[in-house]
Amino acid sequence: MRRLSLFLLVIFIFSGTAIAYPQDQLKQCIFSAKQNPNIQGASDSSIESYCDCALNLIVDEGKDRRDSGYKCASDAFG
Image 1 (tube, helix red, strand yellow):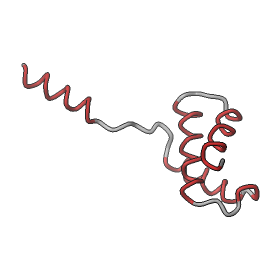
Image 2 (tube, helix red, strand yellow; image 1 turned 135 degrees about the vertical axis):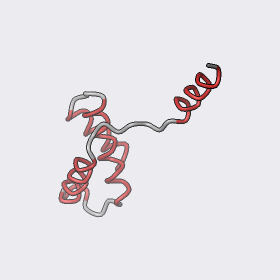
Image 3 (tube, helix red, strand yellow; image 1 turned 30 degrees about the horizontal axis):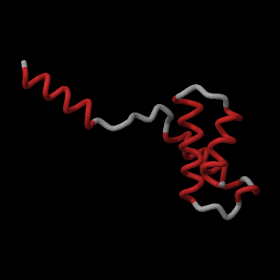
Image 4 (spheres, one colour; image 1 turned 180 degrees about the vertical axis):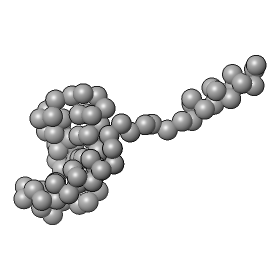
């Protein structure tokens, strides 16, 4: 029983985070962001960071789209 408890504890400690939004949503967001003339010339990593942040807030945490977009844009591009 101790081994099972220790095993379960190790699994919970070292398990990765789950992403609730589908990967196709991330791809759509990146494609859409690259079409936005306001962020032309932004690095791919900044755009991916923005989309990941926005999708996490909107899908995973249920936050407002507009507020999430502004917050993530200021973090990723500001």
